[in-house]
Length: 367
Image (cartoon, rainbow, N blue to C red; front, side, top):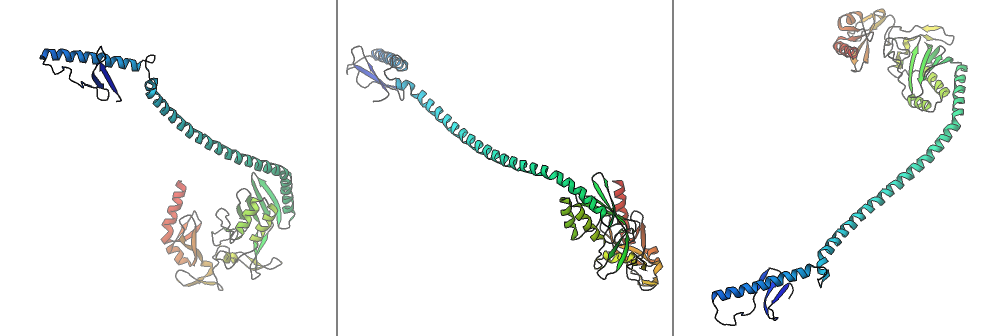
């Protein structure tokens, strides 16, 4: 029987046993030999048995817990072994996880090292290529500048900081009908770093955008050009620093007007000339480019026919961002009674949009 301590008397007779599982003392036989005994005798006998049992029990416990006296040392170390195995197992599992993380980090570093290595090779090649191209790029820039000033459409090139300014000779714009208009000289400011181009001219006229546009396709507000399809070409040439090619594209842009475009139709505000430069038809210097017959025009607002010298350009739409549109030709009476002069734009707008336009420019001035 396991976990049982046997209790014997001095002559070796078993008189009881202790179940270690529940700590109960058992007396398995008749210790009184069926003889009659008094209560006091029974009490003394039980006290004797219990005393022997206690002595035996503690003796056994002392024997079991003593490393030098215990016959079964495995029992003494059992709990420690289990604890040691458990802790060892837990440590091994932690070490395995740490190993996995370490190996994953190594793989990450290896990949990063590979990317950095590839990038270093690419940069070395780029640096070598850049160094080899530096002198040729500088030489090409100088060559392009020389070619521009030698071209018969340019007078000069000036350089101010990071800006290059192209100065043209007097240019003429052509329509698909081969009509020729004198446009004047242009100064074109080019920023090669961001493809920004600004135009100014010495022969500005009232046109689609403002009363002082340097060209039908260029607004007098800041010299912003509406480039259309040519915008992509200009951006590409700027990014490649192809200055001479860019200059030729700009001249071609200024010399061609699309009269099918609402802005392009205003080219008739410039003087139409023949090949000799003689004026065939004076442009409408400060008038709308609306069709005019003889000395009269039809007011776009009231429909009355008035003298063309009394015509005023009035805008009836506002985009909320500082630009007016919807150009119409009004007579003097309609302009006086139903239009408002906007000083910031230097133009007339219809009364119904005047408050909105004024509010916009007042907010701009406050900011």
